[in-house]
Image (cartoon, rainbow, N blue to C red; front, side, top):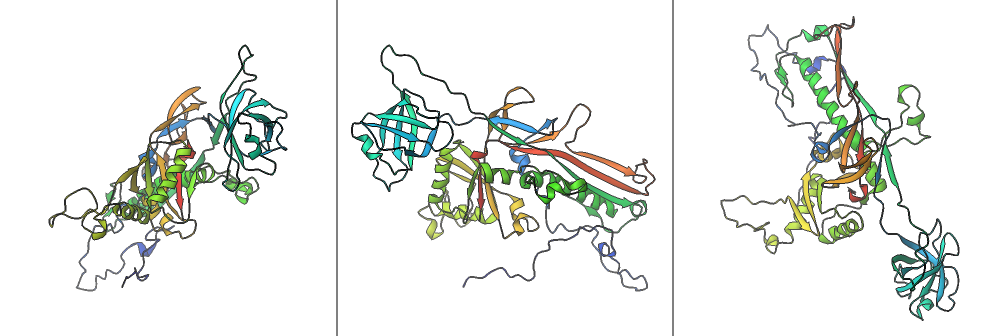
Length: 467
């Protein structure tokens, strides 16, 4: 019978952080009137391991300066145009039919040859080819079919026709192509946000020695408790820098956040999740755990940028689902004897995990701690994100600051900086304690600040996996 993880005892979600120094932070049960003293461990035990989650952007992105409140860039548009959902304007006459694209201006030109086909199998229209003979209106084009009986399949009542240009044809001695096409600009933008934090300790508490030897992930050690609190504030701020770039959303013009009084009336920014949900690809309804699911993902990638190498940053369950999917492809997997192309023996531990696979494209997977952490995304039940597919490499964009084309990673952070001010990661000390002597405050305040935005370029190549 299958078991389950019991809910009690559970896991702590707020293990240590408080807004003030409280007696509960320290051992207070030493009674020197008692002749029996406890045996104490001076070092803290790292029961949660490395608690920081900031690693994703360092692995896949880069950081570069910006000196504006607005970051803009241009990306390549489609080279070819396809119209969908177009319909005949009336009955065909002598093998000639006029079609309406619905809205906008038709970019097809007289003399170009086109393919027309029904978008669904419900109709009996066959795929046919013809030549454009006229543009009777801005949103219409007239086609003369090469097949004498072709227009009969494109009668009135249809509204699901697809059309695209495959070439052109002109008679001998005729004039050239009428009109020309201008490249369509695809301009995207993002705005940096200011991220702040602060740690404060009084001068008296800085002089208070403790019996616990504290230590943090970045190597700070000592018997002064404020050292631990200050360094944890620093680590927490560094996590905020990454999470803000991933989770940020722009504020609606009429939202309460945008119109809030005081310092809170800000406009937000476009984080990675928001950008992928609006300009990328989203998989929903559970994890893709079969090759047919990944075939559907690959089919979508074929329609996008077709980046050959991709990295999957996923939570633990998604990683297990991929391992099980790949193991099932091995003829010996059902028997449990092997998962990969290696010889098993009684002296070797069985490797039940995969680092990647190739099916049309190359996919490499890695666990993303942010999606597993119970105090962060790993603790959410609604709108749960199970992973993200990030294309590897870089792309060419027009950088308006540099004034030329430049190679940029698909994901990179732009931070505010100039010759006199660098706001990538600012920290300064205020007060009259801890070496500071710039105010009459009997305390030490450590301030943290950064101003940055994430540029998600080529978002059409990303995939977001949600429940």
